[in-house]
Image 1 (cartoon, rainbow, N blue to C red):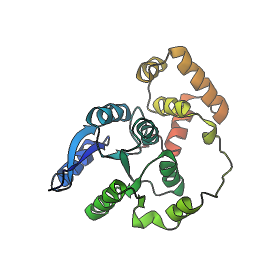
Image 2 (cartoon, rainbow, N blue to C red):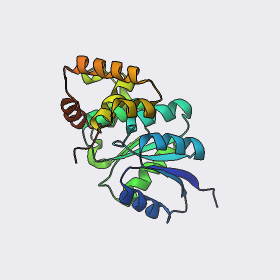
Image 3 (cartoon, rainbow, N blue to C red):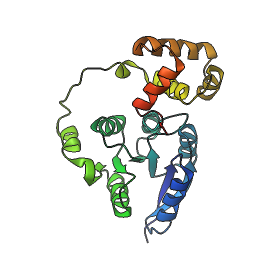
Image 4 (cartoon, one colour):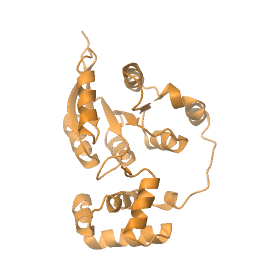
Length: 219
């Protein structure tokens, strides 16, 4: 019998995470070797367990899924990443694949869709849930010709997006500095740059913007 492929589940909702583990435990092909409830812990767990595939939520505390994809693909490009999300918009799908993601699966999808997504990723193929595939993935893979005018959000650096996310989650500058291993002054500089680029000047306005952009949950 072929050796099982190692899986890490990165999802901040514990019940959903446990459900995924239970579901995959019945598979003859897959073995869950680690779990994480936030982006930073996901990075640590992935580095520690060296999985074949990661099931990754886009909206997680401390470090969002896109940042996790970029970090992992930079360090270990051979690891396959299957995004599990509720987002159906084209922007999210394209950002995932542009960042190095391998498959995009809706949380509302069934068991068979998830397994198909995992198998496709492990086989080196891109996959999008049938409900949202349409021409999005086709167009991306065939040409990447669509050039969109940069929005204010697009002008933010990856680090500025991480700081914006944590500001939206209610973290103070010192806490953000500790999490990101940078100085408080650097965090303050990032916040000033974010406010200038977005023309937003209060923490509540930044929080609303982070929710609008899907960096944090509005729940």
